[in-house]
Image (cartoon, rainbow, N blue to C red):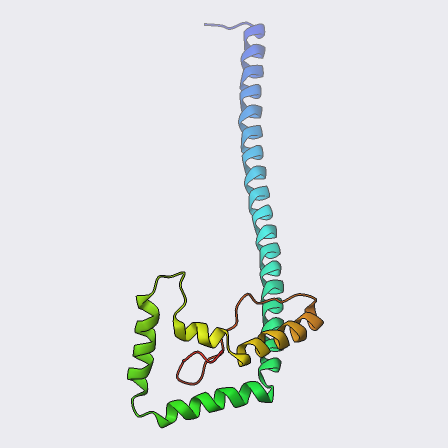
Length: 157
């Protein structure tokens, strides 16, 4: 069976079009895949840079707080608290009683002990000094809450 030249040209043209379509699809999918991986790696490098900046910022603020913590009145208060706890023979039971007292209260109600600590002259002085010290350096206070504890973990201020 003989086919005409016209049919052969049409079949050849259809085969060529099909081949071009398959190759185009392959090229587009490869290009899309390489663009996605390239964009993903660029975003990963960007995110890594942002995280490094955040870490440096946090480290800087903590260094400033450590410098502040070296002030004598703060160190003396913590030393006095350590001496009081060192003199007590039942440190664990004292800390456990304080923790139980705090746990018995509702979450939004501070214990009388914490009220006394927060309202003490030392805590007020610490708040004022920290606001001045960190406010002068940064123009704002970078910490929401700072808790000063002794070596036993008991809250001092």
